[in-house]
Length: 245
Ligand code: DC
Image (tube, rainbow, N blue to C red; front, side, top):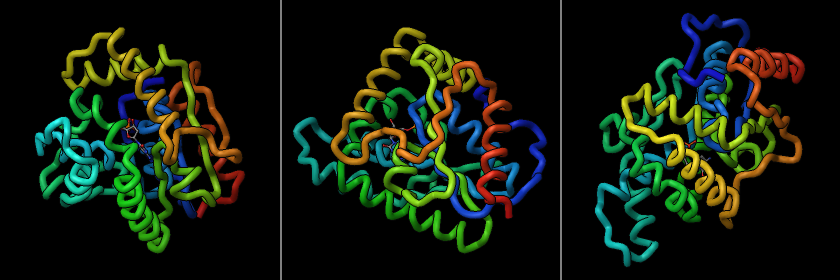
């Protein structure tokens, strides 16, 4: 699946009612298809992973020592002004007013984000902020596509459409490698694969809100599907569930 963001000149064909929950591990093409689905429906889009990454960047910038108590790490992670823009054409994430969308994709943040996102107080705070953004989109009547790891299980357990994307670690690492290359970041496929597997393990085994497919999620293996294929499936599901506005 190409993983280069939205398709050019996305056409708004239907409107979306309510919330679409998109979960799955890294490199499954979640961001690409979530953004494109939101754009094609005139809906809002929320990348919850970017929020955990921005909180992790705040921790890195504070240069805390290894023996820093967890409550101090939590205070730093959630004590900064973190804002997420929900326009799928140009999703933004800022920390203290400055755009950090490129910096949060770097190897330092990627290396630490699973540890920071496993801290219960960090999750409680960020989930509360996610709820505010989701409730606003629903109130505004635009609907919202929300992507992450625990959207269908914890953040919006009553979402009318839940999709869980999967793909083999090798395919996901190759996609991540291409994304890194496009962004000008150096990437070694073996290192990327090791990192993908390491994060899968951490994200799936943490005590609070581990990564797994909700019982009522539609599981889609994207190994042999293009982004267009996945998008077409999602749009069919939106129509079948009566979520067209
Ligand atoms: O989607 P991503 O790779 O940008 O997410 C970065 C990390 O954030 C991921 O390793 C796990 C964490 N995460 C999470 O714990 N819960 C979410 N809803 C989204 C991301």
